[in-house]
Length: 464
Image (tube, rainbow, N blue to C red):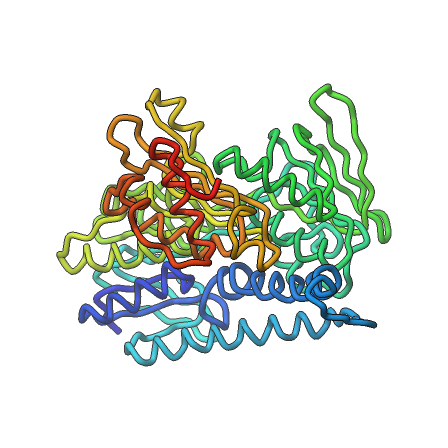
């Protein structure tokens, strides 16, 4: 069987690339090693974690906030099995949606491990082994959880994010190694349900890749929610003894610290998944971090073979992979698409949510760029007070000379959605004055963006 383009991997990058290719008239094959489409994001990542975050948020509100609203709720209990079942239902519905899209767009789906026989021939090893021929290939195999030396993942007590999405019980004490996005989101789920949560982080802050002001505010809020933080700690070992997990680490002074819990979530990032692809068969080399090198068009050193998403340079984000999937499909079609990597937003789905796009203050200081900052607290918004979501702020950084917006960073209610306003503004190279002059409905959380823009424009915020 011969195809114009074959996509290996059906995560957000892969399935979106397949759809766009089909829209452009290419005969397209999609290969997925698992029985369901959607990759990590839909099956054991973005979607299931958000389902559990929402469920645990309902419980937290019922037990902590309903009374202030005049709602008396007594005898509320947690049915963790039902929570997991609902999450699984969300996954099933979402993955079935991808199946529908493949059929709608006439993409041929193959289940099995895809590997290169040559640059134009792919072996599919599954229930039945078969080969297909193809003119071009897009590698979109994603990533898998990383670990640390001295830690053996037994996937029972010492677990990754995958196991944390299918717990049989609520941990009494969950130790999280790593203060990044995944650990904080899953930690939030179980902290709301009553677990003690301790975060052990190698650096001196959580979410270290985002603007430092966001990390400081999120740390303050999570501490109120019961999180415990151990910064500048280098984890040495994590071992299981019966139903106990013992984590040892050295603090900044070189002193050994021992933490005892019943579960340990290892959340130290992810690494590209390229095993079993047979890259050696086509002479494709990986870089020092296991990624596939590509050029500006995301084409590898082998002509006609492209790579996108978590296996290439850049943030490991589903929406980044989607943009790259469309980008490559259109490149293959001879079009001239573009991606502004500086304007791919990052989001943390704790509560309050955290989001940022563009340059951080730390990056601008390091680059010697002259800038100005406008910040506005959520507590000053009528909408935030009405919903009792007063933690957080919106921060806008603009060029000191031109007023062009260089970065927008926010923490607060629904900022995961609100950050899109900043992305649109920055794609069109808006100034802080431009945003400040736009009418924002009242009362909304979005008014925080307008007020922060006013604050960046000669300190003109109205409600502060």
